[in-house]
Image 1 (cartoon, helix red, strand yellow):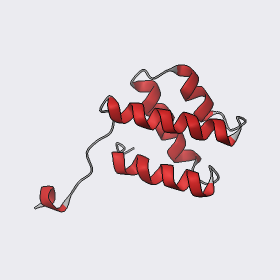
Image 2 (tube, helix red, strand yellow; image 1 turned 60 degrees about the vertical axis):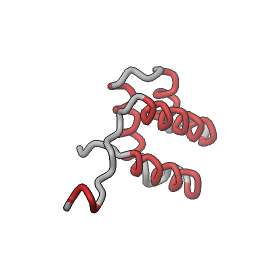
Image 3 (cartoon, rainbow, N blue to C red; image 1 turned 90 degrees about the vertical axis):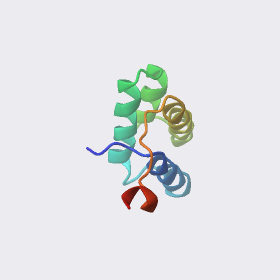
Length: 85
């Protein structure tokens, strides 16, 4: 599985906010696995990964996790045309 970029998290955040979790569980579980691997709070990860939790709770957990992943540098920098050249 490819590492997440901060752009991936941003894109997923917009998708979740506009259309919810349906069809995005694989990406959400990737975020949860990454969060677990870097030692983010287990409660946040559990709420995000639990499909039985209210959507609003999962969205809030996702937002907090995404911010923390970015803060600890657990995402990769997105590739740019300048880097590819």
